[in-house]
Amino acid sequence: MSRHKDKYEPSNPRRSHTFMPLEEVNAGKKSQWMELEITGTIRNLSPNLWKLQHLTSLYLNDNNLTRIPPEICRLTCLVQLDLSCNKLRNLPPEIGELVTLRELLLHNNYIRTLPLEMGKLFKLQILGLKGNPLSTDIMSLFNEVNGTDKILSYLLDNLPITAPLPPMRPWIPLGHPDRTRPTCIFTVMCYNVLCDKYATRQMYGYCPSWVLKWEYRRKSILEEIRHYSADIISLQEVETEQFYNYFLPELKRDGYDGIFSPKSRAKTMAESDRRYVDGCAIFYRTAKFSLVYDHLIEFNQLALANAEGSDDMLNRVMTKDNIGLAALLETKEAAWSNGIRPDPSQIHQPLLVCTAHIHWDPQYCDVKLVQTMMLMNELKQLTQDAVGHSFRPGHNKADPSHTQLLLCGDFNSLLDSGVIEFLNSSRISANHPDFKELGYKACLQKGIANFSDKTNEFTHPFRLSTAYTTDVMPYSNYTYDFKGLIDYIFYSKNTMVPLGLLGPVDAEWFRENKVLGCPHRDIPSDHFSLLVELEMSPTYSGLGSNGFIPRR
Image (cartoon, rainbow, N blue to C red; front, top):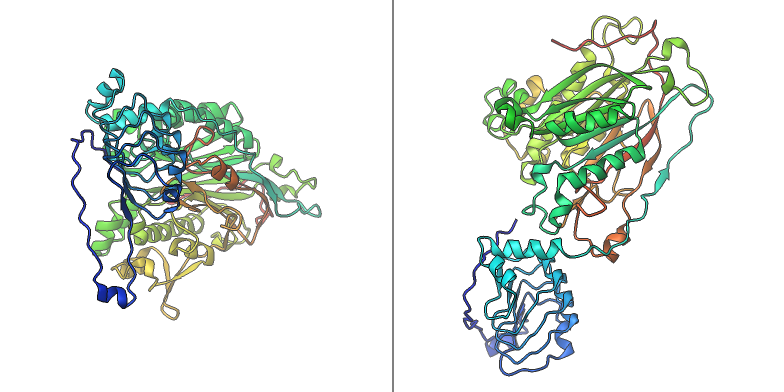
């Protein structure tokens, strides 16, 4: 994010210009000019100026301008704007629409107040204010360390948010319950709640400070969770302290229980710091599900254990402390509520629920893919290494392809990525470009993924579909710099059918109200929650309740 300069000495170096030689003109060469300088004793500006929407720099300094019209907001590509040394008494509020501005020079005018809308210029690095009769409070704030930042924050924090509440997100029906046989119908939510330590003005400069405060956002997050009242809730970026002191006690009142694990770095920290480490959480409605066991998946530990001498595994994958968290749940009788009572031997169905938060950096698509392969291998082991009573009579081991699996999380990967291809298709080429031709193949073959020499592909045994695609949800992450679908709910397509899902926030609302990104007053995270209703068919029969026993 931008770091602002706080002092700007009035100076107006002349910009050098070059002229196209006549022979180049005659040869048909076209010029491309992105800057425009109008300097002299100009009092009025032609309305045609505001049609030059390609401009990135506009120099109107050293004139006799007394006003800047609202139409300046049309120049949405401006990076530099010099209005210094004029006779301006105020600025139009529309100047706040020029959000790409990095340099705004206003010194030596007659400006007494700054429009609050200027607070929206979050990319501003250089602000020139000297030589204006601004209030003592504003100038003293400006003269402080990080003065430009502080002025922008002050203006934005005091700017009223006039946008109406966004329309209710639509519920999109996808099918009807099967009333001819017993099925388990439940809802699942996936939500990256944006933990407090990441919600800074440096990251989200377009947000007022009060919108980013955890005390404000957590109330809206909990209200949203309670509003949709999903039977299973998977959360990412939950701080340790907030899980134990806020989410868990609040949701227990609503009939949930939950599990949590922080990212791996927590193990190396003092107790006072550990409580601020974020991680993943799974909540489940206790009337419908019971917990058999839970299992933590630490990608850095798996990388260390399976490196096989790979420098890339050690230097790129092991250094990232992302995690996955799995919970084996078992259905209760109350979960079978579609009108047909199941056979008593089928009431206690296993449901493996997993949430994960995959590495974020687009430059590390190889790490994202390797982490996802590790995740699927661990889930395979959780089902294959179950001992004791099997959910399927006559089988000592569970077949992963018949396991009821829910996989939810922030995968930080678009639909066309290797991560989503691997999850959706159960396979991926060993030469996939997301591996970046790095040295992963040997260690992946040995302990992380099934490999076929015949097809040169890595595979996993689950048969999954994603409930959300860009046709339904163009983006689950909405910031100024990035908008895309990176959160997903995957389900076992052999045994589960989606009956409906929660649609997107109205795109027209964002456009009409010029919402640059989230969080927002009415949207407490930079991610949108996902919600799916699923119908699950029984796959296991047994004599009463059975449980998987995890590997030790």
